[in-house]
Structure formats: structure tokens, C-alpha cells
Image (tube, rainbow, N blue to C red):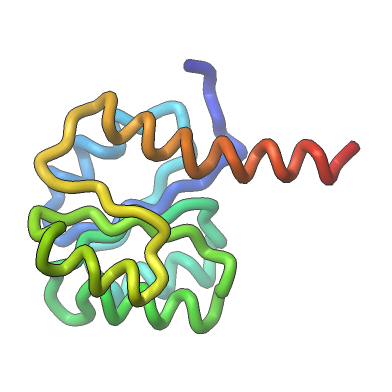
Length: 131
């Protein structure tokens, strides 16, 4: 898998260890991080990420509130819910505008495939537009 520096991914999770694991798995991308929804909103304004991997259960502003706030400002943002509570909270995230759900615990392959599925589609659209 080659370096994909032009693809910016925001990882939002209140657990530093989870952010670190995701960052290591996604080392071929330009990865930025936030520890809660408030930080995520700020990072979206500053960095305009191509993909946001959003935990749901976080202090200060949870993932559902953050998803709604981000999509209000950036309607084309691609947000994936990352949660251990997929059956309970996943539906709320999809209703809030998330494009997919990644259930914790997840493996390297599952995360890589999901990210590639989403950012790969975006890259194909941008390549077609550029021709």
C-alpha cells in the first residue's frame, strides 16, 4: 500500500491508545487526531479532512452531537461511526449522517478496507473530474 499523503483522515476518540492504534494502521495516510467532539469540530475547520473516524461515547461533546455539528458546517464530510455499541448507538449515528459504522474491537484489515472503500471512491471521483 503506497503513501496517500493527499488523503487526510481525522481520528476522533477519547482513548489515546485507540487513536494510536488507528494512526499506526493508517500510517500511509495523513492522519490528524482529536480527543472529543469539540476538538473534532475545530480540526475540521482547520484541516478539512477527507474522512472522519468518529467515536460515539466521548466526554464534552459525543460523536452524535459532533457528527451533526460537522455536517451542518461541512455537508459533504464523510464520517464513520467507531463504536463498541453498534447495535444501540450505530443507528443514531447513521441518522445523524454517518456513512458507515466500524464496530470495536476491529482488526487492521477491517479498518483498512473500510477506509479504502470510502476514500477510494472519493479519489476515483476526483480523478474523473480532473480529466
